[in-house]
Every structure is written in structure tokens, then in C-alpha cells.
Image (tube, rainbow, N blue to C red):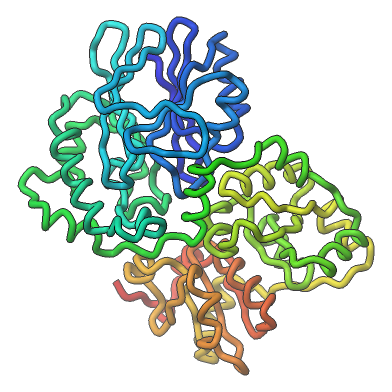
Length: 466
């Protein structure tokens, strides 16, 4: 069967493309649809259907734009009620794409409309299942997202639905089926996802904790809900955009793709409520940046951290980007519903410096100098990694403050004493440093290279708790 996984690492997101006899279908597309149009053009195929496994929370889907540009029908599973025209499929309904068939399997639990699509090839053989967020490799979808929009849909209730869907709809299927999930490791839509992005259903029955044959519903609910971190605050906004509709990506790009020379950029910053978002590499930001700007680099988990730390998708943004990557930044912001970028600094940060504008820096040191500092001065150290990373291994006496909660816990940081901050590789600690400096906290030193570099310094002073 001709199926292609189109994976986007920043969001740990997988869309799918199938084609047969000049007809094609896309499953769970991202906001920018040109890559899917280009893919269908290679096969000289017409996109007949855009299948959505559910109303996504972690990104704005491209189904509306794709339907408008191709004439294809949008298909959701049972109970879906969006604010635009769709086909509301029935459980067990069959759709045809060329010689292929797609069977609808309603699998509520992650959300009530969540649907799995069974792929049947030209010979009538069952090939695989596109599971959306119902099941991942090594995990299943978290059931606590819908309650942020519909209070009556409690996480316990949805977890119970998910248990029934997995046992009654998914696990009876053939072990030979290939599982095609919507996300891989790094997504906030689960807690234990594998870095693998496909597997056989049979292997998942053996290895996925949530598919244990002897598991009771009560055990399932308990294990599924334990250890869930709070979902990013932008998730409900993305769900509503996917339900109600949104402005065309092309219109957003045209509106936002505006270059400003330094004086006009500065004027825009002073006369609006926009935040200045610097998306260069952390090393460049450390050497020089516009005062009070926030760093979240493109070469990292850019969109998820914007969603977590900026949170309000309506926030106005002014961009400082590497030259030539401005449109990439705008695209990746729009994927998670941040459509209010005013424009970007023409010529990048170098233009700002050339214009003799004030700029700030972040004090960063490497691991060896950090070792000497904690040896001689016993200075406070803050670890901004996620809790599981910290619990797995950390510097003795380091304090844990996950980056996601840092902005709401600034009062816990030293006011009149220099402290050090690190993450795993230097990306998140630079984000943290930028947030602190934007709030007037400057008594911070960033550890370049992070915990990874610290571990490589051979000294008994940098010992670790396992």
C-alpha cells in the first residue's frame, strides 16, 4: 500500500499521505498545506479527502485551507460538530480512495470524536491503522484535554472510554497491522511515547503498558492518569480554532511578513504591547540581543515552548530572526495559532547593532569554569529541565525549577546573590535567562552546554544523585 508519513520534528507530529489511481487523501495535515499539494502533484493526483482523527490541541490543522484549495472533503468521526462543512462519518463507514478503502473506527477517549482509520489495500487486505492520539508507540492519548473545554468530560470518564475503545475496537485487530500514530516522543499529548514512529500492533500489545491483556479498567485509569503534567495553556485555543475555523494561512503570512528597519522596529515595540521574540541560536543571543527580548530559538522545540511560555495566542509579536528564516518563524508560529506577528527586524540583530541601538548580553560560562565556581564559592544552582530528567540525575544541592513554571516562581530566586542556571544542552537555560532578564533579574549566569557538558567534567565536585 502506498502510504507516506510526513513527520515534523518540532511538534513531533506525523501527517499521512496515501494515493491510488490518481486519488489521494491526507490525514491530520499541519497549518501550511503547500507541502501536501506538492506531494500530490508529484503523483498527478487529486486530493479527494482530508481525514481528521480528532480536533487537535497542540497544533492548528490545515484541513480548511486544504479543502478550499483542492475541493476535497473534510472527514471527522462521529459526534464532531465544527463550524464549517464536513462529512461526519459513521462508525464502520467505508471511504474509497482509488483502489484503497478507509474504514472508520470510532475510538473515543482522548476526545469524544477521536477516530481511528483502518487502511485496506487494493487486494482487500488490511494494511494498518492511523490512530491519531488514540494510541501512540509505547503510549496512548492523554484523556485530560477535553475537560478544559467541556467540564463534564472528566479525565476519569474519558480514560474509561479510552479503555473500552482500545479493548473493544483496537486490540481485536490483526497483530500484523502497522500502527501509524499522530505523534512521537516529545509531544505533550502523551507521557511515555517512543522515539519510533511506527510499529506493528502485535508488538504494541506486548510492549505498550496501556495494552496489557490482564489490565482492569480501574488499573488502566490509574496508570494512565498518574504523572500527567498540566497541558500547555495554548491547547484550548488551538482546539477552538480547529473546531470553529480560522483565517487562511496565506492571509496570515501576507499580513505578518513585514520587514522593519531598526527605528521603525523600535517604534513598533514602544507603541504596542508586542513582545520581542528572538529566534536565533542561543549562542548568538547570549552575545547580544535587544533589551527585554525573549529568546526561543528556531533550532530547538520552538513552537511548543512558545505555546507554553507565551500562552496567549493573541499576543502581538515582533520577530528577530536569522536572515532568510523569517518566513520559517512565521510559519511555525502559525502552526500553533500565533497569528498576530506584526513584523520582523530587517537585517536581523546586526542591523540593530549597526544602527548603534542599545543591546544586552547574557553571561555564559562553560562547564570547567562552572566547576571552579561551585568549588570555590558554593553558589546556588538551578536546574530548569523537566522533573523526570532532574529525578534521573542531577547535581547535588541543585534546586529544580522546570522552565514551564519558571515565570510564575520568580520570587523563589535569589535577589542579591549570583546564581547559576542550566538545562540539558543550553537551549532551555537560555530561554530561562532571557525571561529573567526581561523581568529585571540580571544576577544570573548561564551554563553553556548544560548538564551534558557538566557531566563530562571529570571532578568529584560534580557528583550526581541517581
